[in-house]
Length: 283
Image: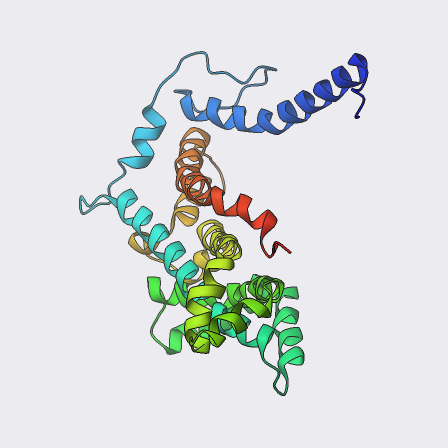
């Protein structure tokens, strides 16, 4: 029988947890305060709450139009959503069969090739900006969503393969062998047995690829030069200049940019929780 901890221990634990939560939420409260403040200027005070509440910063960001009268924010939002979703789909679609082959089959260079792929993750993205720029310029893919998807998918692919390989190795081979004994081909066993069992890992991998593409700034700022081709991180950077900064609009844009990521996270949270027990088999 488990004995309950003394009341003062529980009190200290709850106090520590509340302190950690307050410490984590304090910067977020500053962003909300700046976004809702009509002046948009940070002022030194302990409680980050605006003296007057206004939605002018949100209107200025979301209703921004270019000189031709086109809805520029909507175009940039579409660019970010398209690039992030396409990156997630492409990286998962390519990494899933490759990771399955590495996990289930033995061939020359399987382990060495995986190590080489993982070694590429040690280099920061900015180190590859120049050769990638030359490649995209040669392929006429600068200032295009396709070029950005190509770059993001190739950078996310090694991690996706490593993540999914571990998930496939955790799935017992006996499940596939039982399906093939019943008459299924290896492809049918892969589609109907392995993929459903690896769904939590696939969801985590897709979420990682989506978030990495959604938040990436350096490569996007390097390869994109026209406003109508910008993704949202590049568009937000325009509010912070060398001599002046529109902090209110920047904060409002940061809140708007965070909404799709939060929506995707909550949409796949069931699979994320299921990933904690992935690979377990009743004996």
